[in-house]
Structures are given as structure tokens and as C-alpha cells.
Length: 288
Image 1 (cartoon, helix red, strand yellow):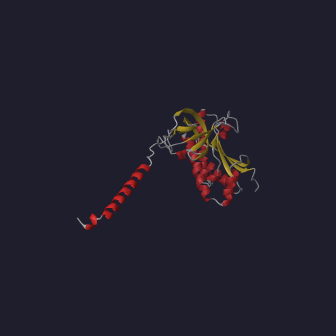
Image 2 (image 1 turned 120 degrees about the horizontal axis):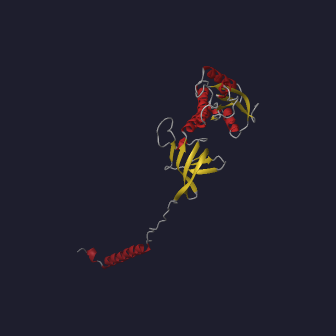
Image 3 (image 1 turned 60 degrees about the horizontal axis):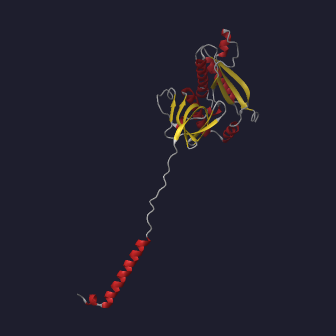
């Protein structure tokens, strides 16, 4: 054993250091707080069956949409990943059972099955009519593309038009169809492009396209036929006549409504089988 190990002073110092370390470790062990292992559990609110809502999509914001019913009542409905969206006959002829949320465009009629969850309505299933979705998608896509390319002046026009629903009718062009058909004649094609040219020369002009039928056929058939005729005219105006989609109001079909002649005669029926192309200018900006 070495001389250093036998020194009483050295042994005393080691004892003191050992005691201090032991006391410090003991104090640290005693002062160490116990881990808090408690946790708060957040349970999702229970869902119960909600009302079935029918109406028109009148607004979209994030994961919510507003549906306005025929009586004017409005319902705000949440859309989530579990929401099933489908069209009655597939989308653009495709037999897809589920559509993306981007299919929920303003103006599209929908039937919504809902669940009640924590004071809000959640859509479990949304059904659209294929023909309505097709028309709305055509207008929506055209509008989005058009406004990205437009000038600042046209953008200002869009803002003014957004809340205005009263227009001056500058002129109306009627194109006619054969019984039960939605095929444009050569004369109709010429008349449509002439109407588009006339409208192009008017500042702030929009086009409103409305389809009609005569009294031949049932109500459902005539409604679909009037919408098909209106859609065919819109397509030709945009594709062949160069009319910009963002200067087009949403087309509509009016079936046998508003006849321009009696349906009791062959001649009268021929006049009623028509699509009216109305050139409109808002009263608020007419003459600017």
C-alpha cells in the first residue's frame, strides 16, 4: 500500500467527498417530481341521422357548402372524407360511384343525406343530376379560364355584374329545331354567330340562352330536351363563334313554358321549338 493511501488527511477528504455526493444524489432523488401521466380524452361527438336536404348549391367555403331550398331556406353542410358524392348516371358518361368535392359547383341542384354531429350537419351522401353537373362544370371551367386571362377592365365588369340581376334586353335571336331534336341547322349556326358578333360590338354585353319545346311529348322529356337544346347552343357559341364563357349567364331549359305561338297548329309548334339567345346589358352599367 502506498504512502498516500495511508494519510489520515487524505482518507478524511475522501470520506467528506463521498458523503457530499451521496447527500446531493439523495436530494436530487427526493426533489425529482413524479411524472404526470394523466391525459384528457377528447371524444368525437356522436352522430345521429339528420334531415334530407334538397336544393341548389348557393355557396362554397372550405369544407362547407350552403344549399338553398325551393322555399328560400338555407342550410350549411360540412363535407368530409367520408362524404360520398355521386351523379345519377355517372359523370360525363363515366360510371364512377364517387366524385371529387370539386364537382360541387355553385348552381348545381343536389339531394343531400345528412348526419347531425355536435350541432352541425355533416353530409353522408350527395347526389347530383348528371345533366346539371355537366352544364355547371362547362360554365365554371370556362369562367375560371376566362377570368385568368381577362384585362383589369373586364375584371371590374365582373365585380359589378356579380350582384346585379336586372338587365336591359338589347336583342333576342331565336333558332329553331325539328320535333324531338337538338340538332342545329346551318341557318341556326349562321344566326348564332351573327348574334355573337352583334353582342361583341356592345360594351358590357352578356348572353343568356334559354331552351324551349312545343307541347309534343311528356313533361320530363321536354324538360331534358329544352336543356339539351340550350346546351347545344352554348357549345356552338363558345366553340364556333368565339364567345367567351365568362360573358355567358347560366343557360336554362324552360320546357313548354312561354310559347311564342299557339301549340294548336303545326306552324305554332315550329316556332315554339326554339332556343332564345338574349343579349343583355345590366341596367347599372348600360351606356357606360
